[in-house]
Length: 133
Image (cartoon, rainbow, N blue to C red):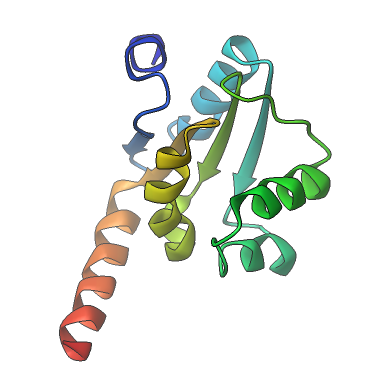
């Protein structure tokens, strides 16, 4: 994880995937606490509608980050903060937003998800895309 942080410098998100209940979330949060000035942990298994709604409109990232900081009561520091998307497979819009968030470059991103849930979600999304093509 340190190698990712130091070598990538925000140019890619880190995905921690594995079986359920093995410590992925704990690992990500411990790393964030020890290696960053601040962090926000968004657990998509129990997010509010207010948090979910943030991912419906990603056109204004300044507003997105402002609202995120207000909701979680955490000040983010450019290139010194990380945002953790826990159980990412439960929020496809957040998974989709990662590309744009990483490109923005202000913060680092860590995603966690279980293998089976991620595979199931991608199969569902692929099936939907094929139907609409």
